[in-house]
Amino acid sequence: MTAVYLYLHINSHCFMNTLETGHEPQAEESLADYIRRMRTKRGLSQKSLAEQAGIHLQSVGKLERGKTAKLNHKTQNGLAYALQIPAEYLEAVWRGVSIQSSPSIKFCPHCWTPGTAPEPIWTDYRAKYCFLCGTALRHRCSQCTEPIISLNHRFCPYCGTTYKSGHL
Image 1 (cartoon, rainbow, N blue to C red):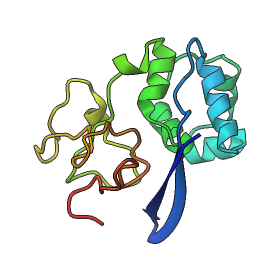
Image 2: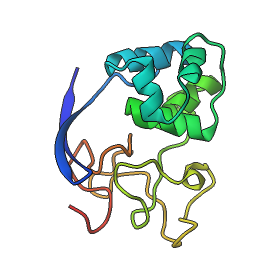
Image 3: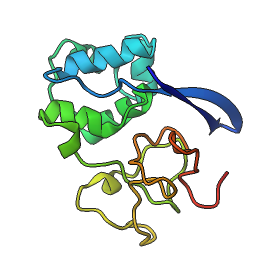
Image 4: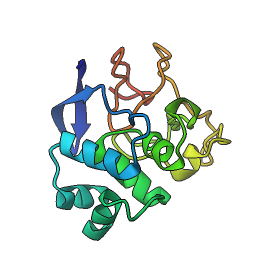
């Protein structure tokens, strides 16, 4: 398993974090199995996942038991943030589509705050420009042009370039 070390700036503290491969959903993997696999991979209890995702503990239990098969935007973005995976992976699993056919992560390089989820309107597959400032949305690293795989980090895991213009 390859890993790329990234420095994150969270709450004015610098932390070392590891972005690992293997976060992609497996073929024929259910939403319940995928969430459980990613939660255990992160070493999270259901309670800590619920707290970090901003959802109820009962919701996590229902998801992992297969009682909930569809995610709303708040739950999807919260789980993606807590599990440190692209929200598109969760959407691809519950829709039953491949990751390649799911939409990419997009953000406004001027309005987005590093480490936070993107504005929901940016994730619409039709969105091309920021609804706040009119700037073109970005879905690839400006330096190496690799697709952006997560907005939990402020730097590209491939080349180390900051995602947000004017920030180090």
